[in-house]
Length: 214
Image 1 (spheres, rainbow, N blue to C red):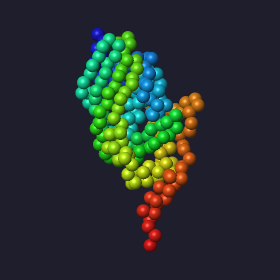
Image 2 (cartoon, one colour; image 1 turned 120 degrees about the vertical axis):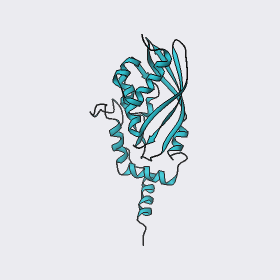
Image 3 (cartoon, rainbow, N blue to C red; image 1 turned 90 degrees about the vertical axis):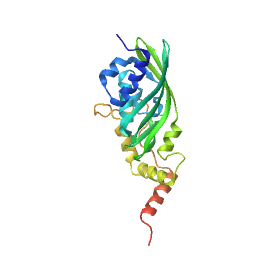
Image 4 (cartoon, rainbow, N blue to C red; image 1 turned 30 degrees about the vertical axis):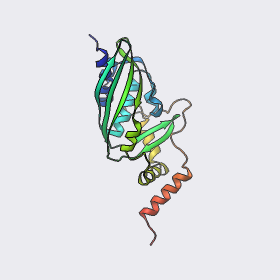
């Protein structure tokens, strides 16, 4: 006997927590599409279980002890809505993308995150076939010290970009699950970005702060 709608919803987030391929095959439809993958590595847009496994790997690379605490589910025959809290500790670079290019890499802060999300999951043939969400990302960025922007955080992020650490982090999270590097995809831009004058100024300020003139 297959899972009911509520079990499928909970199962999807269990996959993100654990990266269990067998559970992904049981829960995720081969035609699965993630409509929230625009800010994720390219592999997260792959249809079917592989995309979900890639999304979990990306999030676990940034947040250790990743948990999705389900607060409530509501379902009908074609959809299940899941209200939950995403929790974990920020111990790895949190890399986000825009139009296939590196957008932002937040260096590890060691801070805890705990914020609410609502997810709408489409169902077909007894599996999850689509995903979209409403997330309180502003709260998460606030918990990481990114928004509102603090000078120390901006300096560190600019330094990461200028020294290439942001690009290396983007390349690492863009690697295909299993360890093989995966191209960014057809038509996708390179992961590196030319530093802006703001980045250069920020990095210079950080250098002066660490090595003040006598």
